[in-house]
Picture 1: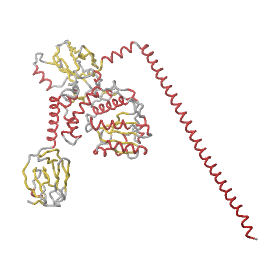
Picture 2 (picture 1 turned 135 degrees about the horizontal axis):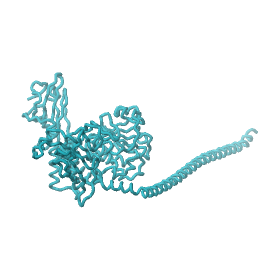
Picture 3 (picture 1 turned 120 degrees about the horizontal axis):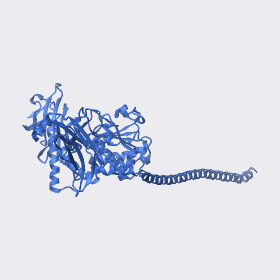
Picture 4 (picture 1 turned 60 degrees about the vertical axis):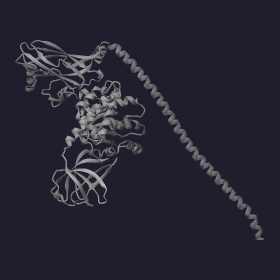
Length: 606
């Protein structure tokens, strides 16, 4: 059967498995198509699932919608894979349909859900069969993320255009690297704080797509001055922080190259950044925005482009003050970039901008915090963290704001003391956490009789470092008054589902060792001041020593410059002198030749 311009034979959104052959008898491919007729007679909207014919097997990859007109388009892939897109208006060469049968239509969402489930199953199968490459195993937080986060797994698939094998390889390598590098345990307390505070790298503002900007102030970075492994940890800290703040959304790298030179260009640092995006942070890069790059660095960025995969090269955007508005709104751009934002960098700890919405001591009333059951709870009152006091307070909590974790034998534990402060009401309480994979709470729920007090133990799960406790790891303590003091567990469950908590108390976490250290410092202020002065003196001495060496180097450079200038002047003078001598010699030689001809001419006159 020959198919030319006959859209009427097609059924809207019907899938077919079609084996195609050309006039020369060669077999081309297998495809799945679903057609949807448009009102315009010259166009047909095509719903097509991307497929491949590989060694006789039909492989389904993804789904796509496009509008085709008067021709067929064919693209060849490696390993004998073919993808064919067909238009049903007219073919440049008649195509014979040798077989056709209906196929079940599978939506894009269903396809992705299945691929995510397959990726998860494949990971845990390999983990069971071969075990983790690190003797400590994969980090529990990453294991929990693979179990519970479809969005994270989908990012691996999107990063590799839904190639399951490549996505799986990247997932395995990422978890291996995260355990080896200690990514989950990195906080601002265990990285170089001075690197975070110098303003050379920081997160701020967003691009036009709403993606957060990771800004690199190149003029504040000099290659070789900073400890590179520590700088790597600071970069990973910012990547993790921006990923948390954006709930896994993409970020854009902003290279501020204004007033930079060759000494500020760190190819090793740039290669490390590219490696993070390429290997360990899937589908995380939106743009690479390069602001006012000096022309002397053109060659360097040609090398950088060669490190990027082909699909990432179009993400590079070179901008100046007049073109930055194409990618960053003027109100979001700093004044030094030609924008309207007068922001001045100052490092702000994550707990002041994240977590439960605390900013400068105030609560963001619209901020949502997801606890163990992933039910978003919205702040209702502008009270600070801790007890939210109603007209009649029912429950007293100790501590009121921060759970302090200390080592107890082999465990790291914290304690919450609950007390029913009513004389005649029984209370049902429940405790939730934002990080159920990190903590074990016993008992996490129960009933408090009037004036009863109870201690609740919070234990940090094995595999987590107490220094990895983040200020956005929160606990929510809720309570409800009970009418029936003899309610069963099932009745309590129904009660919690049908009624809202009367009181809610929010707690954050901290490391007891750090708190004890701060207490000791406050009790030994004089000794600390003396030690601090000694350190300041030592630091000042080193700075003076460095300044002296810099001055010596500067003096030597100035001397060399003058010597070079003198050498140039002497060379010029020597050239002039040699030229003058040669000119005199040539003139004398000419005069001598003329004097030799005069007697000969005299003889001829006689």
